Length: 398
Image 1 (cartoon, rainbow, N blue to C red):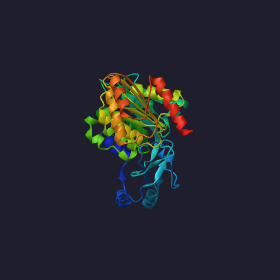
Image 2 (image 1 turned 135 degrees about the horizontal axis):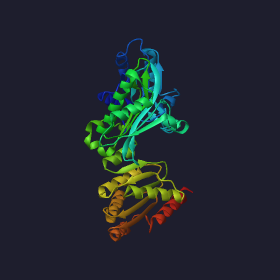
Image 3 (image 1 turned 45 degrees about the horizontal axis):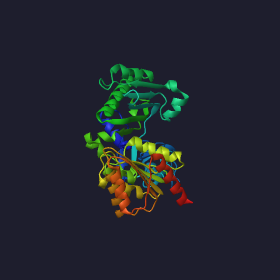
Image 4 (image 1 turned 90 degrees about the horizontal axis):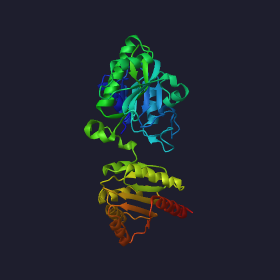
C-alpha cells in the first residue's frame, strides 16, 4: 500500500526528518485558509497528489501543463490550484487514462543548493534492507544507474542490528556532506530507517533530498510504500489508504481476501496459488493471448470467495474469456465447482469459459459442473486449457 506525499511527509516529521512546510486541501473552499498560513512574500509550490511519478512533467486533460508548479504569489498559487484540482493528470506512470487530482499540497519552496536521491528498500537476494543514495537527485534513478553508476552508493543493513553509525557516516561522506549539513544528513538517515523498520515499509524514497543554501537537509518529496501483509499491525497506516487511487476491482477483491491485479488483456484467470497464476498467464501469452488479470483465490477459499472472484472478473468489460485453472490441494476442486455454479446463478456468464481441475475431489468437481448445465469447456492440462481459451476468444472476436 502506498500513501500520498503529504501523509508521507507528516510521518517522516514524526521521526525527526526535516520536511518542507505544507498544507493539503481537498476543495477550493480551503484555498484561502491554507494559503494564509504562508508569508505574503513566500514562494509556494502547488503539488498534485496522485500515486504516480512524473507529476511535474505531466499534462492535465484540460490542457494545463505540469502537476507540480512553482508560484511567486498567493494569487498565482490559487489560480494554478483552480486549474489542477478536480482535473485529470496524465503522466508516464498513469497511462493515457490519467488520475483525477482530488488533493493538492501547497508547500514552501526551499532555497536549493543541491539535490540528492535517497531510498531504503528490501534487497530480496541479500535478505536485508539496502540504502541507496546518489548525489544525482531530482532525476530518474534508473538513468543515473545506467549512465553514472559510480554516483550510486549502496549500503546493506543487518536487520538484527539496525542502521549503524558508521554506515550512516559512510553514506553522508559518500554524498559529500560536511559540517552542520553532515549532522543533518545523519539525523535524516536515522529517521528514515526507523520509519522503514517500525512501520514495515517496503520502500521509503526521497527524491529529491535537498541541501538548502542555509545548510539544512530537507526531504522535498517523499514516497512510502508498506507491506500489505503487515498492515494489521499498523491501523494508523491502513487508515491513510486512498481508495480513489486504486482500481475498483482490486479494492473489491481485497474485501474478500483475494489477490487480484488488473491487467490490459482480455482473458481472465482464476487460479489458486501465485506461482500457478503466473504460469497460467505465461502460457496464455505463449498461445497468443493476453491475460486480463492476476487472480489468486488462495489455498483456503470458500464458495463465497470464488463467487466474488467471478463477479469481479465479469465486471471488467475487457474480459472476453475466462480460464479457471485449479490444482486441488488445500483448495478442493468441488469448492471451485460450487463457486462457479453460484456465480453463474447470480451473474450471467456470457463469455467462453474453460475449466481445468486437478487434484483433491477432482471427480466430484467435474461431476458438479457436468450436472450444472453451464456452458463451459473442460481441459485436461494447463496447455490444453490455455490453447482452448485463446482459440475460443479469437473465434468470438472474428
